[in-house]
Length: 551
Image (tube, rainbow, N blue to C red):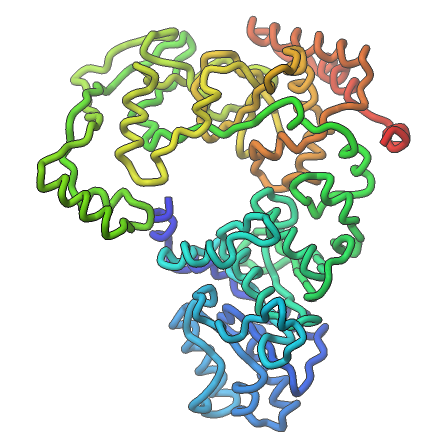
């Protein structure tokens, strides 16, 4: 996966979405600069912030470019062509660059960059290091250099006990927090994804505990991207009881009720999050990737049949150091391990592998079949959808697992294996609504369709009750407005949904019977009737005032 990401075109790999000058100017207009300030723009690109900053400090410093570029303005840019173009523009406007200046060609995330500027916890009041303002537009979706990943994980991988996602803008923000003086601010344009997605929980937590944070949405950013963007402003200091989003104050206690520390939690929804959660009843899991679906996964026709174009044979492949380096994480293996592998190679040792060859004539098969299992790939539809895929699974998936073991490092694991062939519920990973489906026993799980299963000791009827709830418009509203407003619906997102604890016992039993009937009808080929759905979903509604009283 890392190698694929690093093979992208240069602009995508660097996460470059240059800031329109008019937006940069509006952000800078809200800043009050002083002649003694130290200001940093990491990833300055074409200079949308950098050039106006230099211009402002030139006026404050009487036109002294040497002083401005050594005492006031710092910048970093990773793209050499863009870096040189921006330096040329500085020279065009203000004359030759001084021999010494603070504009660095390099990777801001490189730990050696600004190593001396880090503000230590016991040195927060020092003005000898750190910055008074950090402003800019960190790369979004950019590739983190392979050779830096392990070191960045050590330095920035956790804050306040929470994991920080290894994503370019997330790491940029965390590093800038270490470079700010106490009472100083950062102001970044970044993707709005960090407001709710579970993987950015650690970043939200670090910002909440690190000072005062405000977020406001940009109505439009640029023609380069249609990603929704926000302006993040953070002032370093003591933790405050909440954040400000689009002028609306969100209470920290309500934010923490969501589990993922959602910054789209509202007072209207807080009561719903005051009771039990689905995680009390179910455990959710992702599935696996085969490495090459075309080898193992077959689409079924209307009669449950398919053509098998391949034969699978187990062989012994020679072990070589070159092959082991190709399949290792980041292409790295310790010296001792390399010596051990080289010794195995010299001794002619082998590893069991699977050889896949095409049949001269595909074999016609049908489900059910002893050597295949139904495969739970993502499908549109709710409550129940007939199986559409099968996976070659002879001897408990020996061929698939062997293929994965001999592939790249990120393929070795078999995600969701403890839940294979269990009864549960499932949904599409990428979807604008939850669209939960019943998952009968016997399926192997695919990573594109996460699943959830009842915890030990939970009554079986809860499966039907939760299936009805997760298909309701209210559940999707809470998911997409509070828990994860992107197109993704992760397994942990489902666990963090409130359990409908406000439904009384009679309505609960009615809902269970209704859902069981809906699934039975769909399995017999009948269509869903909207009136039945409307009735079912009405059982999960709640009166906000009554719920607030209960909470």
